[in-house]
Length: 507
Image (cartoon, rainbow, N blue to C red; front, side, top):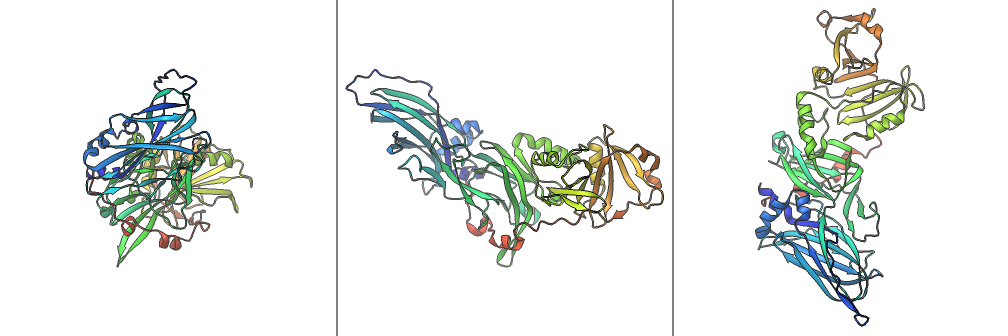
């Protein structure tokens, strides 16, 4: 795994101060200062995310680790800063002598960086360290690869002429992030595939422990000049990154880059998908460009990907709409928010003449869930449609998925005096009927509604029915005019290769 070493270009580790042992020497009234001895378990954070072996293997030749301890007095002023550099994961000891009696806040961080004997490259810097209220760690680059892990830690100690001995243990802040593709960019016909966060950028971390969990991140706007935080280059099918990005509603776009003349042409194949990423996670963002229109990317814990991918490869689609008949819009919204991917649709209830009040959103780049309510305030769900707007996806992809999801095929539904012959399925609990038919505009409509037993009187065998009809779907072709102009945004996006050629020769 040749790339792994470069990924160690800048590793930042939180030092979570856990007092494992304390040895307080007796003090006397004339003793006006004390000594603090701190032992750091350097390997702990790497062990937490399963990276200790990679780090240890590459430390001797490619990476150095710098451990820093900041000590602030009770007024928040920096008293002293000490540190050491190592090429080992063995425990380290930092000592502070002649520390005046008083109460102190200790802040520690560990910075790993590229140091191969010919060059040194650091990705993070400490800023505004003179005051506890202003000290922060800032990133110098958006891309952090593999072991670029960031964290925070603090402890409060009181010195009263005594000697304090404490052991501290690293704690991961931020997430290990694997960008993974079914094929390499060049197999799809691209030179690069980038992942952007579109709503904001997490540029660093405030180190003051008095800050709340929500207020400890240094946040910047992203819309002005979108820049990727993960990417795959040419022959890559996956690449380990580290990211500070996190949140319950992250907005991510996946962009492919194709060379055109002397420039690069972007295509936003996944546009502003909503995702969740809990701080301290080990996750994977997986996608397959060939199926991206109707199968969204997977974004979640690595150990959940194999089961998700096995279902997808077997033919089970992501169409799992809310089918609680009679429910309200709030319950549909909760169903949407629980998904690991969704994107904005119309964003509000709209009236469809002769049908009801309509609300929809994306569950894949060209696949929508559409809900019809009886009332203007979104009460009484009466109909649901999952619509694939990609005309290249065959109808049997959706009928197969329904069977694998436990639906029973009943035959062709044909009402007298109509030309409609639609595949009818019934849910395992008997409460839901499903019609599958081709859309006039191309693609497929999977329509769910409360099962009507009288429909059984109008079932004919599939071999006696004519070919599937194509109807004018009641849903308009999806568009999101409220979003930024696509061309304007594409002009501002930059591919990784056009901005900076990251060295991927290390592993």
